[in-house]
Length: 316
Ligand SMILES: O=C(O)CCC(=O)C(=O)O
Ligand SMILES: [Fe+2]
Image (tube, rainbow, N blue to C red):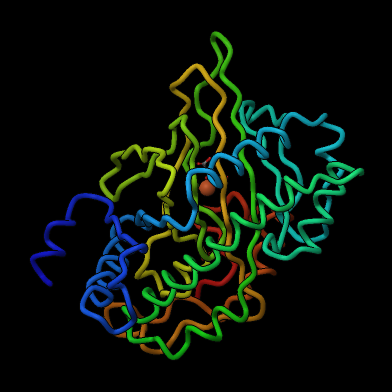
């Protein structure tokens, strides 16, 4: 196993979740757990290949994403919620190319229908069902991959309760093409405030990951590939063993870019598991209330613009 891990040094690991031999406890499972952990500790991410999203579904979810962004701005602004970070973002002079919109619990019929009706008062079954069909395999991928993360630290016993307290948020992203003399930065380098984000790109590339030694690696769009990214909450849960993935979007092509993010957010309070505390990693976080962290991040500029918001909120 050691030598197989060696092969993954200096590149973002790729794990094939479609592999039939990938059953919990099998040799390939144990190897995949090691790769997942290596990817998250070294880069804050890994690439998951998962063909439960066939190309037809990939195409239809991006076709409806385009339909969504083609709606008038006033319609997109109708999406409001008291949950932090779930409103429409766009026409922001600091991020002129970027627009983003989404909703919580995308696998649920009621939640998907309610969002769809906010956007299309007469309904849009194709939108609702494409989004639900895409979100279901994303939830499966999330459960399998987080099981590997937990098991790689000997914390398999905590995984079921993690999944029970997790909910998902689906967000659609659009970047228009820059005009002459305009910036080509779609999104500045940042970490996500999520536990995990699963990113999926369509045709036009632009996503880049920042490495520990300040290099940027391009992540190419592939229809059956998903980038599994650790957010600030995962970093804190792991007591800083896992890096929150720093990433950005740079527009290089003369076409609008679409992408999708499936966010995982955790209800209730997470504590750093005692197995992750030792001399090298003494306890670095108080119990973390993820949703109150999100609320603080979006309402308190002192936290939002601090060097590491989750440490400002919950560091010991
Ligand atoms: O568009 C992408 O691929 C990434 C979007 C992103 O990083 C974000 O919205 O936090
Ligand atoms: Fe992000």
